[in-house]
Amino acid sequence: GLHMPRIDWQMWFASLRGCGGSAWFHRFMVRLLEGESAVVGLLANDPFPAEPPRYLRSWFYRYRYAPAGSDDWWERELLGRFCPPVRLEHGRLVTRGVPRSESREPRPFEK
Image: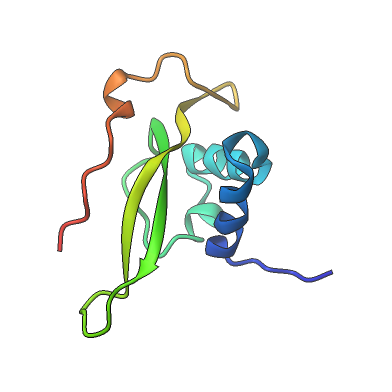
């Protein structure tokens, strides 16, 4: 079969199924929380250089190409939460015990 290893391609399919239908995304979050170097290496840069995160949250965005002449490649619009905030407990993702502050909407990217 066709092998599509790119994480952005996999994320597109995950968005079609939603959080509950994305087993690979759940494994991805577990490995990030464990600090698995092979999985962190899939990202453009390591957002957790000192230690693995204690919590993860994921958001759903709609991306569009930026208008012609813009310095940006794309524009994005926050649609809502993809998966609830989670933490790792005995190798499993759990939502209990995650601080309420982790449910805040993300801040926009700074230029």
